[in-house]
Amino acid sequence: MNNKKRAIAAIIIYLLIMIIGVSINNNFFSMENNIGRLISLSVIQVVSSAYIFYTIKKYYGWKNIGFGKLNSKSLVWFLPYALILIAMGFSLVQSISENIGSFSYETWLTIILTLVGTSLAGFSEEVIFRGMILNSFKSDKSIIGAMIISSIGFSIVHITTIFMGKSLIEAIANVIYSSLLGFSFVALAIKLNNICPIVIFHVIWNFILMVSSSINVEISKVALLCNPVNIIIGAILWIIIIRNQIKKNKLKYNLDKVITW
Image 1 (cartoon, helix red, strand yellow):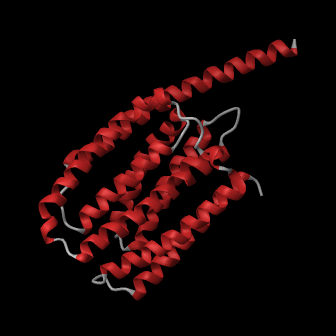
Image 2: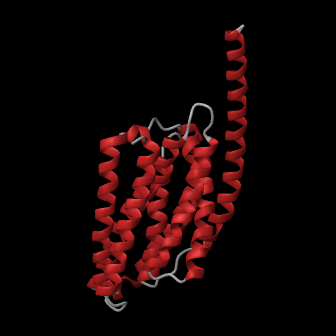
């Protein structure tokens, strides 16, 4: 089995573990039993993420799936995302500090379990789509096809949130939002030569959104800026990458002609 097939198999098995686990979870725990559901979901996420860790270690290696030497100069493209996270994080901390006196044991357990789940989910999704898929499908001739597959795959799999209690409309909205994020992040992964900053953003972003919803605290409206940032940053980087790919192919073509002559 080559790396392309392994990457596709990894997505399928990861999603099957999550879907089966969530379906069982929904049958065993009522919506009122929030802690029980979170504990169960955390266990499911640990199992699915453990499978991804095993696949990477056995068949890929961390350096080969996006953990190469970071192109620090290109971090400037990540700056808008960092500023959004800082604003959201500050708003969350402020809201928690204002309500901390009313927090129960269950509230703190909810925060901890949400952190565990979002950390594993964010990491796993990034190493699958901006790691295994992107690096397995790219070739010396072109990286554009791999970027397209990575972006589309990342957006489509989010329809599976319907198995996690989301309505069809909510799941479709999630797919649309994910497509914008995938569009920008796959280009960032290429530009940075390292997916660590993207993993960090994904984990913190999911944690802030989910924990604020779970414990009913307000977060900064600056989060709404993420969609236009995705479009702008993504479009610029895609143009740069496509232009560089065209130049690279032309240079290779000219070199081949010289060697032939």
